[in-house]
Amino acid sequence: MAVITKIQVQKNNKERYNIYIDKGSGEEYGFSVDGYTLVKYNLRKGMEVDTFELSTILFDEEVRKAYLQAISYLSYQMRTKNEVEEQLRKKEIGQAIINEVIAKLTEEAYINDNEYALAYVRTQSNVSLKGPQRITRELQEKGISSSIIINSLHEYTKDKQITNAITLCDKKKKTYRNVSALQMRQKLEEMLLRKGYTRDVVSICLEELEEEPETDAEWEAVLYQGQKYHQKYKKYSGWEYQTKIKGALYRKGFSLELIERFLSESEELDFE
Picture 1 (cartoon, rainbow, N blue to C red):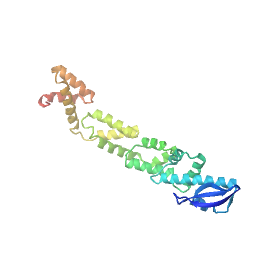
Picture 2: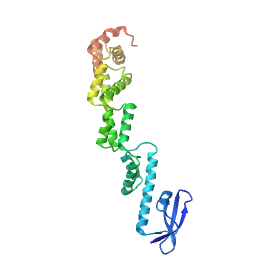
Picture 3: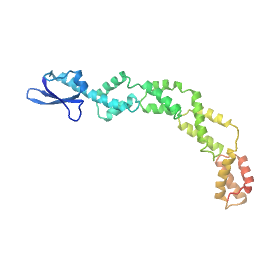
Picture 4: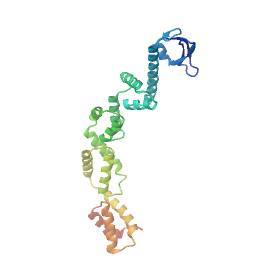
């Protein structure tokens, strides 16, 4: 049995209190608590506390400190249950205390994996234009369960995915304006797969892009690439020059018809 002999406000933190106790051999420092714990247990001078009560107070105090650390971590942005647990483990907090903190945060709605997943899907689909597969991987990395992920993706419809994929392609096509249509298709396909779109959505997107009216883009691209290869192979002439140009442009994905047009008109073009 111990008796509380003095309660003193800490000099550097006015919200914490040092508790001094006497176990029968004189006053000594016992432990420290914050104001919440002080009020909760009605700690006061002259109060007797046994070993069990003392261990309960100290455990609750550790929970309280971990809880406040978690609240601070959550104040910057929404976090998943798993992220909060990992943050507390980094602070070398025991699992029993972490369990208490997580339960309290969940009860108070500071942690809600369902709401987190829904908000994440909306942001990544509307702002970052990511596909469902990539969003799924990222949510899994954050510790969200499969059932919650599946439910959160319901509002990311296939039509929305196709619209996003086409938007990404329209933006990216400008970057690939100097390559063949075949290479552009391959690059766009790779980009969409990296973004997390399924192959069926990628296929639909590319089919819609192919239905767009023909432009001079392909001819501009073969002119750009042809000029580069002309500089490389201009030391050759005749059949050897044409063979090398044909092979280089064909490997770039240009059609033979377009290559023949380039070669037939190249004499009239000034590449020097």
